Length: 320
Length: 265
Image (tube, rainbow over all chains, first blue to last red; front, side):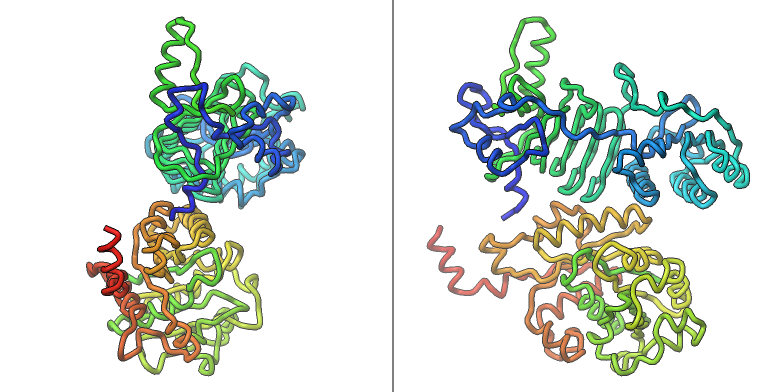
């Protein structure tokens, strides 16, 4: 018996016939009210109408994907973006420095293979307070990934002093006003896709303000949060949240879809309890009544038809 | 080149210390100079499993305090003189030592040994950080239970993030009969989730409890049990030999189960 099989969202032969498709996935607007009784309702095939629209859509808890350290390509160098210190702390979900580094290391180990060895890195520390030890820790991590830290941009005097003492070039910026610190304005382009070639293991959380591509398995206990799409070339068994910025056109694709939980924009779906026999590449997207899942092949065809302007409706594998 | 291996699992009670004791002994029997280091400060028990409790004079903390050399603190095993134990202090807790100090201790042992096995405490807190700091390789011990496998997965992720690059898996306490009846995760199921190279599979064996209570590792038995053979095989694999996994189903493949299979068709 494979216990993991008990948590799976799978396609059934009903995929071809949307009218008779059983409720395999349940969606709910508010993850906070994921009570057992509600889920029981949503799960039962006799009650297919108990969907997200029975309750007014309430946004899922906001997750700011910009709370992790990340690298951005900037011409012939990389910029290491530091999350804004005070802002994160204000949200209460502040990551400790150690956790911040841990997440960053796990990301680097997964490989973001878009740089050459010895690429120069500029650190955008913003208004985060960094001491000499923290700068050194960052440099060690970057060196192990064959990157060289050269310049530090900061709006904090102490950080600038520490950086000068450690021998980096320093750009001291004006302190950012509160307007700049607020979450990015809508309409801002997404960051370039994050490409990871690794097994995302339990306890690892990857947040990215763009699309995440994983070559490998996503294990239970891990979580992927993306403002864009999530593509898993492997088994998705953890939690995935695409369109975390509220974009309802985003989707989650996996070669084997048996996640702990799926989130799309402000909707939440969880896997049915029964085991499933077969796993085919599948796509989760937001349909008329919440999160739906379709076979990848069918999804591609439907989307293609839609772009041809034939007015084809997305036929849904699951009513949610 | 000394091989510094941490034995870890995340979850408690899966058999880290038992595996460390048996593996250390099995390696020593193959003429390797082995030091086993107990990193479980405050809850040490590797000394009990090896039957060395009453021979401990100095602990790791005494070495760090400069009261004795690391060689002197090493308790030599009377049965296998090439095996030594560096005991943890029992009267302190995990915060009594830092990762840097742990590195220092192991660096002191490295020149005179072929293998250093570090017995890691359960959990992923300070004690874990200490234990993995000096290690170059890791053996993740797990049992075929969903909770142990989840914890092992988390630990493998942490090991990767902390630059322990060579992680191998040891599946402990498997019950072939239950696997056959589909009531327990199989080796394949575990590997499917963890996706790391398999070092060995040790069957569940009641004699492990007897040997622990006596302080005599299984691999010392004259008439080796199946678990003892499995530990020996793991040691041989660590030394680079190609040893096939023992067929655990063989013992259960008796006349009755064959007949049952025959009639089930």
